Image 1 (cartoon, rainbow, N blue to C red):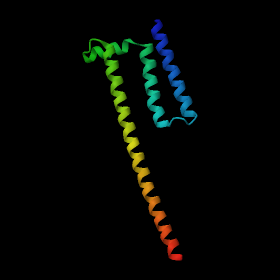
Image 2 (cartoon, rainbow, N blue to C red):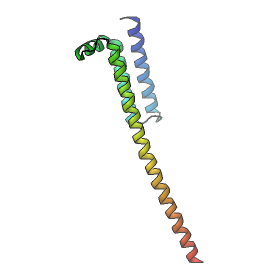
Image 3 (cartoon, rainbow, N blue to C red):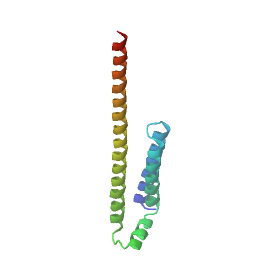
Image 4 (cartoon, rainbow, N blue to C red):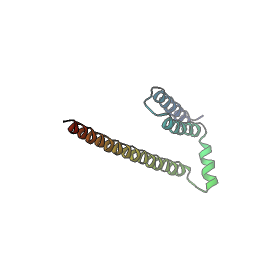
Length: 117
């Protein structure tokens, strides 16, 4: 095994361990942790057997295999950013509805208080 293979494999394992630590400590949701563990798994896989990337790139007709890795990485980052924006939109909508409900409750309590006078 080459030096770069050992290095990338160790980095992938460390990355997976950090993700598991964050999930276990409830600092990262399990759903998001599964995504990152999958990324770490592929890092370990490609670190230990880099010829897999070469073979797959060759199968797709890509001559320079790191190009495939970069395209996949950019695609995954795009998907992750889109998912984060969708989640943020959902949370903002829920907060807005909660704020509106709270405002209506305040108005009703103020009307009830003024009716008692």
